[in-house]
Length: 263
Length: 251
Image 1 (cartoon, chains in turn red, cyan):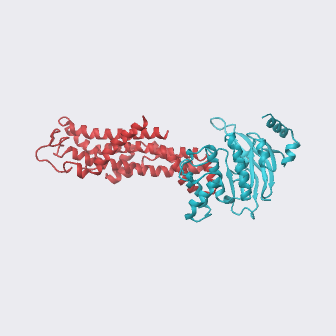
Image 2 (spheres, chains in turn brown, green):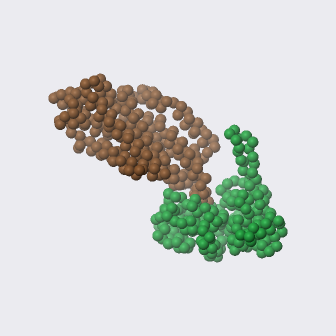
Image 3 (cartoon, rainbow over the protein chains, first blue to last red):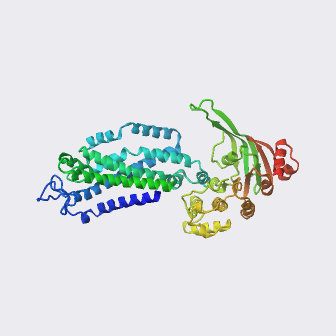
């Protein structure tokens, strides 16, 4: 069951990733070119998923949007895993005062409602793709840190770590070559879920106008543009929504499958 | 004297209850002293909980003692982490599960710069042969080996840095009976070949009899009797030692 899910998830994400990478080749139109023939055209042979309120091809915008949304997800999670790994490993390995300080800092960070924190920071720094990646990364590392810390706390009592000490391995060698490789499994599961979460946050931010700025398409800001025409053009809401849903489902499948695999 | 252990004391704090009130103290080691001559073999025997493993870890500097001293003669033990090694009881837990055998064996070689980097593989194969395995093991992971094979790999790793002193902490008690005898023979052969001084920890008197020439009997953190092997086995002075011998005969 686990491997089937993993395969299915990888298939979904693989397709979206390929579409995103090959966007200029596979998208039927330029995502910002306007078709004079019509605004708000329903799905047809000419525009497979219809056009939006400015007459732009929806399919092309969703494909280009995949680039933005997926890369925000990946990079934001990359940043958060990197921070969480460092804090968690140091905290778990050294213990004592350092551990208490880092864990209290984690508690403080967790006290903020993340989304409002992100909103506040974006309002100050200004919305750009780059800022969004960094802000999501900086506000989502706490789970990873706790996970890594817990893994390392139990690993460092194992005899193979003591054996490393006995052969004279330095602390940094033990952390980097032994503790982190053995603790990374659950973190990967968590990170996969994190990508899905980051995509959702980006969509939410864009929906509030604090995310990716038009005309650059992201799944979130296509959705916001659909808001005003919801009554007459269902497709502009449904298709990007479906893209978000499917991607998140895909990442969740991968995470579940990985979890089963790791045991 | 290659090793002098002077009056080692170790106390563990046992925390009880939600608010850690009523913390109790457990005396794991209480004034343990002994010394060892070069090339000698010391057997440490005692039932579980008598502080044998704690003693081993303190000698290796893996945990701190609360009092007392462990002194290695610097003329014989110049580089402590290179010259003093340990083999643990449980081979299933002593090898990094995410690391291929070649990297596990290469670690002590790299850390102590025993040999140049290009000769690593050759040396790793040599180490494996020494403990009765072949080079096919190099690229495999610990999970692919049996307990006995894993213990052999642990021995190869311990010997990689060319140590002079080894602590064997119940090295065969988690192995099958049939393999135990083989392992003991291997230890004795390696002892001869590398002129090792070692401490052999066991709860099994028959094994101690085969492996040691001096014996220490421990009970709840204290040494109750120590002396030459023959003296201990033939005319034990203390009741506890007699009890252990009695129990071993029955078994």
